[in-house]
Length: 405
Image 1 (cartoon, rainbow, N blue to C red):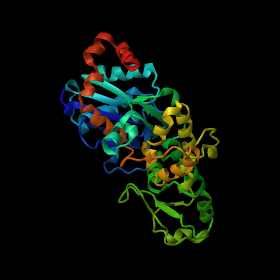
Image 2 (spheres, rainbow, N blue to C red):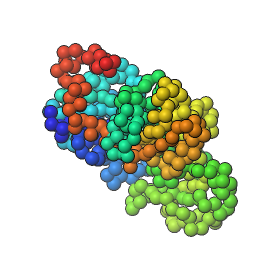
Image 3 (tube, one colour):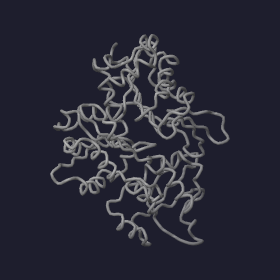
């Protein structure tokens, strides 16, 4: 099988990344369908990015809490990607697919049925995203002793969860994996609540608020100082996000207010028919949840403690290697200031005799896909993949045997 006939798909809770093996960059699109309120047209995946007003959209996502809950919807989104975006023929192609951590056997069996019976792919290799992120960093980052041992601690901060995943000899150490039930979805919902209570009601505008979050949020390096500054009338954090108007402004944009006027004259500073959301400390309070989930009464550890717990759960001889190669992947890691704040909070938890190295790829969103693209272009893919013939002969039992090998 030629490498250009293997499709690589990283299907996450928020976005899908898809392309052919050996290629450098994937096509990225929302893993959902949407329909404008009052409209009839159903937008699938990539169509949401094609000059579409991002407001007044009702979303349907096939993934909930990290796992596929609607295979009919996911099938529709994947079919659009394979046929429209890639023009791929599954009957002559293989598929490398990422799967969530601790995926249940019933979910794996359903995934196999969709891949082989509905799409008709000739082979399938499923793999946890953190392993592929390590593969990408081994290919692109500065060589480290941990890379030679296939060792890393991957912090996968995605849409549904945040996982700290220790890896040794290119195998996930399941006993050390730690999960925080907090990801990009919770951050979006929290921002919706804050903005709706303080400024404009956006509780029904999930897709729009995701755009606002990506545009303005950042991780504070000094929370107390930023909170104090935000209380001042001349707060450096004061900003406004101009909402889409459906005509010339389809996605909205952030800007610093030229004037800040309170009271009955506040509307006079904005052009007619222009609606803007006022933002201040929301920009850094929202991503602060990653470090202090207790702010929303979630009794779980922050990301720094999550990493420390994951490392502490494996053999002590691996601690130094794991701390020396911490990899950040997932869209939530893209928040400005995240890496620096993580290092600041993690360093006091790491024993002095260990070096601490936290690396972030150029694009944490596509990191796992890029690792999968390079892996699927090697002969190792054919050795590990389950073929359609094997599936028809042995079914799901074959995959279970491969997973336990």
